[in-house]
Image 1 (cartoon, rainbow, N blue to C red):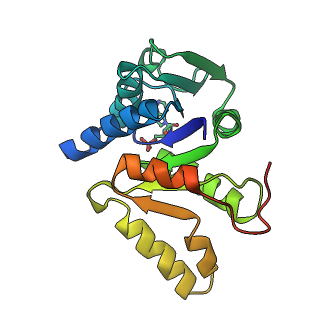
Image 2: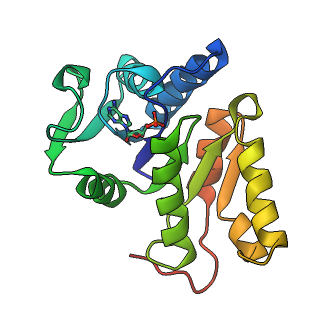
Image 3: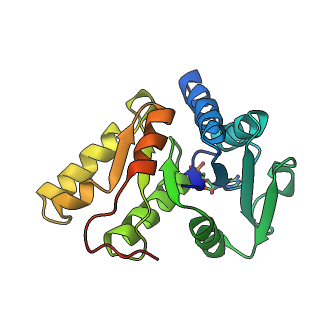
Length: 188
Ligand code: AMP
């Protein structure tokens, strides 16, 4: 596992725990000798993960759509910064650069990126591990929604195991690195 893609909020959230976890995750990615791939912004939890990875001597790669976000929110000190044409191209590039995905707490942007990664794994487009960093139990309601989806017959129980859930960043990275895709999963 060389590069880890992190989806997370462009806002900091209402509790200091979120920022602290973003810092720990950035540091843990650097400590493993992995590179961070993310959306390239300097604000919110996104900025905190990147700042922490860089401060710990790691590498951070940003991918941002040209013209979609205000230019001044782009992080100016990244190891690499890629400008792409739009959100679809951004997600495609973030995914192709990365060996694993982590969703930290965030909003609609984070959910959208997380669900594309999970859906594409479910149908075999990729076989990369997906982690949820469950800070302050943030993802409990989402996990309950997924269990509800299984109970109601719209998702296979086995698809729940696509989500590796941990509250500790270093432990989550450990599990992502040890992940073996389910038999029959596509490796692309
Ligand atoms: P959200 O969770 O709604 O704050 O959105 C965060 C996710 O969507 C990030 O992982 C980014 O890829 C993308 N995103 C949303 N807002 C921004 C922004 N202002 N700058 C850069 N990326 C953003």
